[in-house]
Image (cartoon, rainbow, N blue to C red):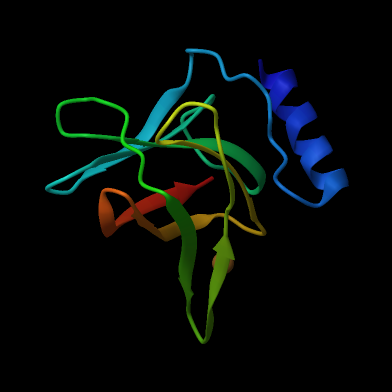
Length: 137
Ligand SMILES: [Cu+2]
């Protein structure tokens, strides 16, 4: 499956967009989860972690009872504080999967270090945002 990731990364790189349409297996590892009153937000990937360079991942929204949650428009942005210079920012390219509440993402990190990740949404079940702290290795 790591070969699949490599192929996705290369293809996404060639296209310059996050056209990740691969069928994800059930083997995804949860990287992080956050909860709000209305939603549980999970970042998942095949390796369970982000690394320097291009990464493919899945962002999933469920209700507190575990049902898929259609949250409409979603964005994921990251920031890393750098001593003596402006923070490094990177955004993910997200596309809806066929399954409700599931988004396929790609993101490119030029270096390692812990990212402050902000996920926002705006849709039928309202607006919200959560923050994660995610290491990039
Ligand atoms: Cu940096």
